[in-house]
Length: 293
Ligand code: CAO
View 1: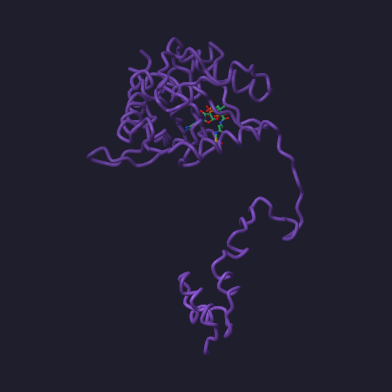
View 2: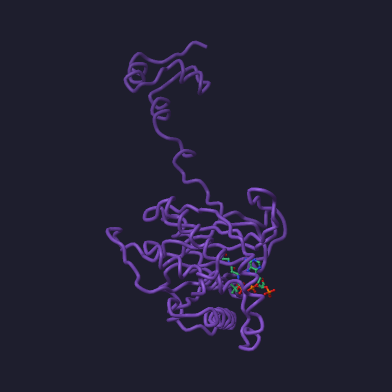
């Protein structure tokens, strides 16, 4: 195809880095004007228009649908999660703890638990181990200042416990943990969970935690990547312990292994610190005599 363009149009095109022959081939036009050159230079409407938001999809086009409004509470929680996921460079470290010794201890303590009227779930031991681990690794018990220029180191241990309720996820906080024994922790978890489900929590029972725990151990799963509850620096995810063959150097032994997933803020915590933190935590669960001191 011979391209026809006036000498001035050709010059106009070449000065703007456009090859008239190539443009003619691309557009299928044999006669080019200045307008064709300008059109090639200006981004077309398809390039400039913002792509349609996937949230604006007309779902009714594809089949019957029904709209369910979300509560103010779940919309606020969703916004916090989105801020956490989009602003924190988070990494999740995985480990597992052998729960055999804790299971034996729970069994041994059952008569006392019954006498006290306390349901001694495994989560109480996890909270105790996390308290001791936070004492040993104070950098995890901190929050970044608003401008990122410093760390607020917390001289107390408080742990948020994610509770699944009919009105959404709630994270009330167990406080004063350095002074609390296993019985007080167990009753504290049960009390917070019951009141969270009955919408009876007081505002001061939320916020200000050292870090949070999300336990899906009562339900199942092999692991997950929990999202940090800002301004905390880390969150521990617990999944259901299950018996697995573990090599002891001579033979495989059946061990109840609990998956541990620690998500941490990489701006403050290094991978090596996270690995050491979680191993210390698992070691405490595996040798609970030290835990109960
Ligand atoms: N491995 C094996 N069994 C476990 C376990 C684990 N890691 N964790 C709990 N269990 C057992 C408990 O011991 C209990 O068994 P028994 O009745 O035989 O003693 C049973 O599972 C039920 O546990 P539970 O979950 O009801 O109670 P809990 O104290 O462990 O946890 C609470 C309380 C409030 C954390 C929990 O009920 C809950 O709401 N979990 C959901 C948290 C959540 O949604 N996280 C996701 C956040 S991100 O969306």
